[in-house]
Image 1: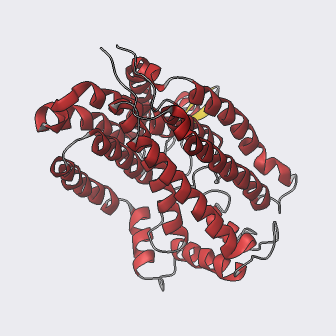
Image 2 (image 1 turned 90 degrees about the horizontal axis):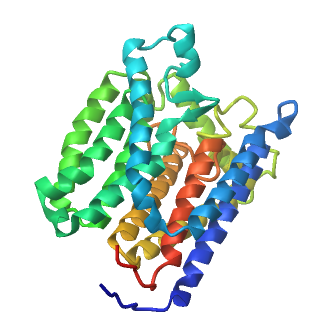
Image 3 (image 1 turned 30 degrees about the vertical axis):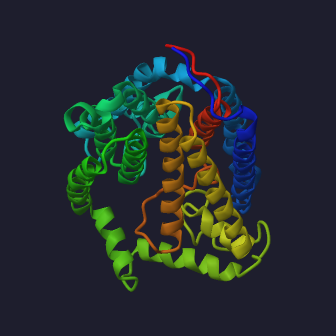
Length: 385
């Protein structure tokens, strides 16, 4: 089997370099924002320590994945995916056995109940398994889709084999409950399937199936009902309404150029989770419209480069993988921006690369390294398998 190149790899080099530069800019901006968000507490520098270690580990993994031929990921796709499902399964079982309350001591140590949900497994350190699924699930789905060939257009032989792994991970994530992450995982899986060649009419089945399930999940949750009611009627007196208002006050206070780095006031107890769920509001206050536009430009460039890399990938696996990972990061940024500007109900979705969260940063930088790997190998010969 022989394949011919269309263009020389050097012609694509600027895209991967620009993607790497944008990623580093977002990470550095995020570290600074985390320092600022925690600057009002004693030993304020500790607020950014997890972000610094996450950036260091994520940077090493970014380089490792970037220089590794992404084709090697296919052989590890299934073990990584099933290990992730096993972790999500353990969390789901504990949630079903002890709904809405901490379990016995050993169970609480292994699967801690924090802020009304169970999303972590303690393996020396606490690991949010659904965050890991943001990387392992697209790799597995892309590998399955690439192996189907022309069958990908079939409902039974293409759509079902590609989408059931996505549905399984999303369903286990909803049980935690973590609906925003489930939506994000669905978006990533659908993006992989779409880029891989699944027919659009088949993907509409995902919406017809997922929307009723999510609606039932939302309507049976008092917390989600409160968030939606606060979004629909800002005059309601509840914590969610207060957060929407405080977030918008931050943007208004910042104006065009901001009040100055570290000088924001909304983070002083007015805005909950200003270092994660509402970090864009903190940035809007301290850096102003210019800072928000800078971040917007970075994410637009990131998605543009990611989709260009996916469009020109050397094989179907790389195309689906780069497209799905790029879409998941873009959708996450869109959800975060929509919430903090009161365009969407609160979801608890963080801003990729910027919000505090060591594991989230490590996973996102690893995913970007995979995208760069796909980009670096365009135009090269594909060795026969």
